[in-house]
Image (cartoon, rainbow, N blue to C red):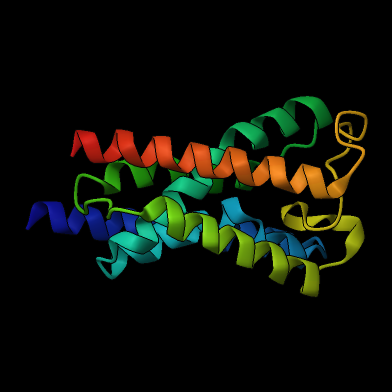
Length: 177
């Protein structure tokens, strides 16, 4: 009973992290940034824990685990920092890791996370402005143009890194359960 209460509290905290950051983005007239995979990952973690759905928790965790290092790199190189983004990235990841004490990661979570990432990229391209490059759906990330003069090969590299990262992380998490 105590673990269930703590799980529900952690779940609502993850949802709250997402909603607070989304509110800041909407207030700052950048609502399209609420659909970055990391932010949605935090929301998926919260909803997955709330409804006891390990698939949602797992996809949210995998998106965050891959995205947090990239977010940290972006903060360090661009010097653009938002405290509320820290909550959705770091807070969401910590809650996801805790969540695996309550729910087990299903096999082939890596495939679900990859498919979701592809769909999210296509959705981002349809509904967000090109200048925002949400989920890298339009162009090579600033500063990487020399390494990847072709957007196609950039996306291929990103997907290869995502699949590899997701598979390794799934293996590690499932082995520890």
